[in-house]
Image 1 (cartoon, helix red, strand yellow):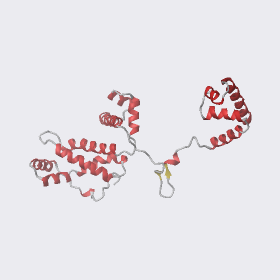
Image 2 (cartoon, rainbow, N blue to C red):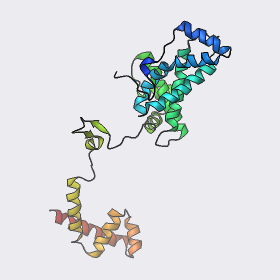
Image 3 (spheres, rainbow, N blue to C red):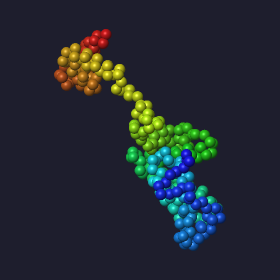
Image 4 (cartoon, rainbow, N blue to C red):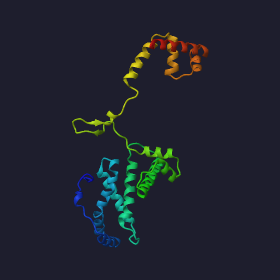
Length: 257
């Protein structure tokens, strides 16, 4: 039951499964324009859609949407399938179902990403899947980049760009009484107790400076101005700005001691 996909209004446990003989017979009837055979064939391959969407469940909370999109891919595969080719329908259909789902996820991503970046990311994912299938090992970014003849930085950027955003309120672990959320695992390196105490100390030290020293420190270190810019703005020489700046910093250091 762990890997079972729940679809609203569909009893997935009772979906029909067709034998190869039944599929071949239905395909012949479909080729002759039998709409009943077409519907029976589609119903008999819905479990194929379910098997495909399992790999995308982490990409979307709504399995119903993925199932519907996967069914569209199934129908497109049926419409384009050539019975004269020596290929099983499932072998032909699975890539089309996957492609339809990927397009849906790409176009409905909550973060807008340029088409060129998305296309590169999906090309990289295709290389990854092929590499896994052939070697049973996870490829490195360098290996994917070499395969596509693209800089590894571009590959890494494109793959990061298509990742779904995570809410800070998402539950990492919990039993409905004592939950652990994403926000609980993120440390705030900016608003720490040490930084808060440091800001208080700096504000107190600034009060000990003369008005001109305080103005220069503000412009130099809080407004990121150069000494030349400060000198031109307040009408004194750069040498005077440098002297007042050093004097102010010296006063602040004495206050800290």
